[in-house]
Length: 325
Ligand code: AVJ
Image (tube, rainbow, N blue to C red; front, side, top):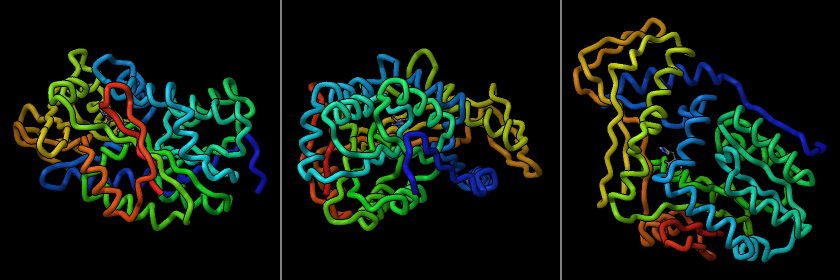
């Protein structure tokens, strides 16, 4: 296959059907649960960009600090083997942070193809336009779909060495058990010499963490509630948004920062033909954003079969990008 600069590969097979089944089974669960991976429709993408721009949401600035100011260090870790490679970014979004790294590599004449993977085709189109304008020399292949499915696609397209980027604390959206499972699966999919650069938000003052997810302006609340709007629109449901309230928690012991929607009244919501009843104060578990200690990171790497090759921290020591092999 000829990998030109504008390739975009989608996997929309059963997308709507899977969304429907996932939402329905999540709401029939006790406690009720929705997956945060569905936050990212067009409005969700916009709201997340607003979150990244909020002063409370320190994660963006921390990882930007790493990618802007320690670019050479990252490149040294990743290009110590000088062979050409595929740079595959999981959950690339608008590549706000990684684009500094991409520019750096292109300017140095590095031979690589950038393969962003994202569940949102909308954000990938935005990304592609941005990259064509700002880094026209870059070879990009956009992959729209779920992580492992699209990783397999990427492997089928090219047999070059792989460097996987998993930034922004995206790993935090998994429960710890899920994260072990995910990293082990990744390790098994990679060949010797492949690398993973993975971002972790560190445990820190609990107020700082809670504030990042509990902003006074209500953007994070709107981000959560938007999933109900999406379900109303795409699955013909009748959630009344006024009857649900965002509630955020952070447990500094486990490092789990969790968001919920609270039903404010006894109510019945209909999705397609299915009725879902809510008791007053019943919760929908919406998202976990897991925070890590250095020991947690070491344990995760070891348990999943990786070796830590190096790590880069932001100047506040709030965030780590760890390079595993
Ligand atoms: C995109 C997963 C990194 O968990 O910090 C931000 C998503 N949720 N505010 C995170 C999010 C609420 C974010 N990640």
